[in-house]
Image (cartoon, rainbow, N blue to C red; front, side):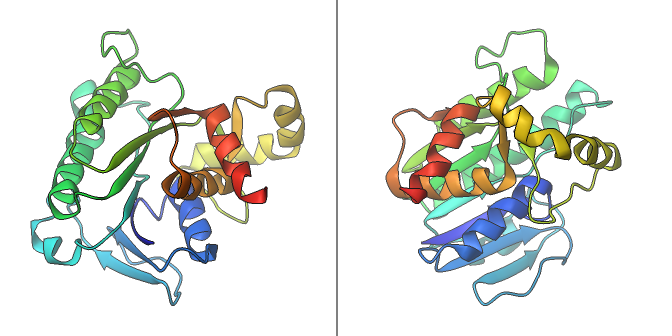
Length: 225
């Protein structure tokens, strides 16, 4: 299995990268990043590319891959709709179009979010745009597209978010995570589980392109059985 990973420096992407490097079925990982910052590993290759919305200059290095795990994303807090649409919808669709052209037998997995609005008509700006992005990806000529909709994600194994206030929030919640997992098992997951679930979905498939938080946890547990 050869994987392309976008967003490897982010919190979710760090978790996905860790699981990819640990999985014996993963032959190699190509991480497309804006800044060189990833750990050295025999399986890992890194392409530093500033404008992810335009991959023309590196297209010759993006073919021959089985899966893409797209973990790039930003919080909509404080953003106007046009700016959020550009970094969420425009960028994702641009990358997907390029990869579908180069790797038509690829499985593309996109990290969306719980509460995403597939109708594209709801009141929530971020949910509409995420829904628009999901709908566009489902029309792409990939072998398969899966849309991950996690709710609360607990970072594990020393993984940290780059957003300061998120980091403070996670630090406060961490001691209570076992309780949250017991009380709300369908609404919490971990960076480890998201990564494992992605790998298991690419290997085993899933009957629905949409994976809610509970589905992510189910697929995470598959490799332990």
